[in-house]
Length: 413
Image (cartoon, rainbow, N blue to C red):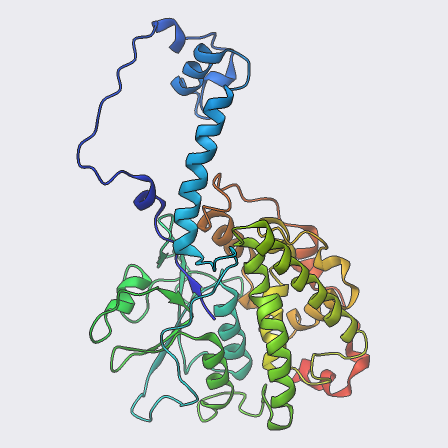
């Protein structure tokens, strides 16, 4: 599971022709110089807006003619489908089909020859967010340094230098950084550094072998399993096991439920290209959330009194639910805030030391509302819901009484 970069809209909207035809309009100069008090004929900077004036000349104060509306709708739909075919491939029914990760560990830990690893992430991506949380809880910050990419307006994952934030933190919250290892401008350049190059989908998270300049893995679950048990000799908190042997079967069962219906389910709603595909996805999403909410009424975490990888995987979707998915991805049946147990459970995990520092909400919102151009062409970012603000998420979840072990976890990380 991973997040991809979006193909540049300009590649799809611009004609491949190298010649440009000229459009000559013979109009009266009056149309460009309307009454200065008419704000609709000027742009936000006060400059005259010829497009608005031409529109007024053609059809006055009435709506555009039906033929024009139909033509624009058809053109936009065709362009949207072209962009979505690259961003979110679909099956014949219009349902979103997530492409598999290219670089997998396949149950094998990186070889002993690898002496230095580096993690590439984006703060927007829920799959990358998993790796940041496990890295933090295990105390691997020094052992596995991180470079944080941000969304570029051309759809790429790019690196930025934020003055005064050399350590990648802003008031204890992770922020975008430069590429600290390869000094590349964007993540695509990093992938191309591997032997033989790379022209496939550029995704986060990505674990990089610094010594051999090679992609170790770009599958999020492989990475968090490796962080949990494969680097205990370097971890500051090696005693924390988020996937104990006695719970593996239960963790895997929860993952089989949560991944298709919740983690990927919100994307199946947002990227659905037919009403039928959306209806199937949204039904599966909310029936699963109902089931989990009921379960959490008597269990502090998914697998009882122990935090596991299954909880981390669910958390990174839940923390984005009211912020992003409820609005942008049309997951509108209920807000997470309306689920008493689920919302308290999410706050419980958010308040575990080091977790909140991985949640950069402005960066998350900018990434979705600006990067996913086909879903939000205007690029307008809505106001943050009150229930997603730090002060609200810091309210006592009152779930400690469900587990004595949970109290030790809260104070032991």
